[in-house]
Image 1 (cartoon, one colour):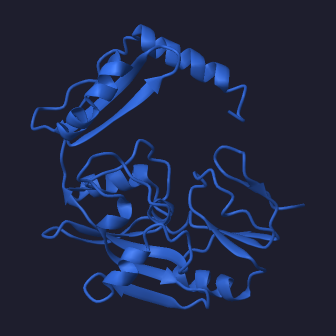
Image 2: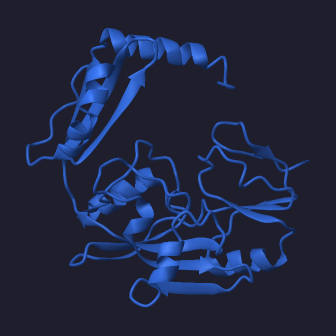
Length: 259
């Protein structure tokens, strides 16, 4: 019976000779040295690209997860590369820390998010790899190698969008900030106003983004800013005409994946 792997969308699939989920760096190193090639590594499979597709070996990071250590004074946390972003948020909250920035989706593994330059929005906020303090990888020879920003800054920078070129991420130390709350606001406005005031609107918020609602003439603007206010219950969702258009369009285009 063949091993079958696919990414989250199902548009990329493979039937490698071996699918393995190492439990530590030593086991991972053994697989890199002995498994049938080419060897590719999968985080959460959230990417659209065929990078992981292989007829040799696909290594999953799903067992390399969780908190390794943390420093309350510097707000640093060392985590295993297979930790998904959703659970990572809860881990960090439990130790009084938070990622400075993140994207809309929390299903990726932190290792995959680092290697593909996953990012959120905000003119002063970098992608995940800009938060790196230390990195541990298993290289192409199966050797465990450690790098620190203090002495290996070029290598730390090169890890951003590395796409696995230097080896398999196993553990990373992230520079975080103290736990915080955000106030998130969403509203719909004419696309002409959005484009006219784009730079000013983006600069006025810590994090901001907008989505054009096709064929409607409107855009949805979303802004997030630090807040000291007490948490409030999520308000009921009231569909504006533009958002209804977006949902109907999304449902229709689901039948046309090539678009």
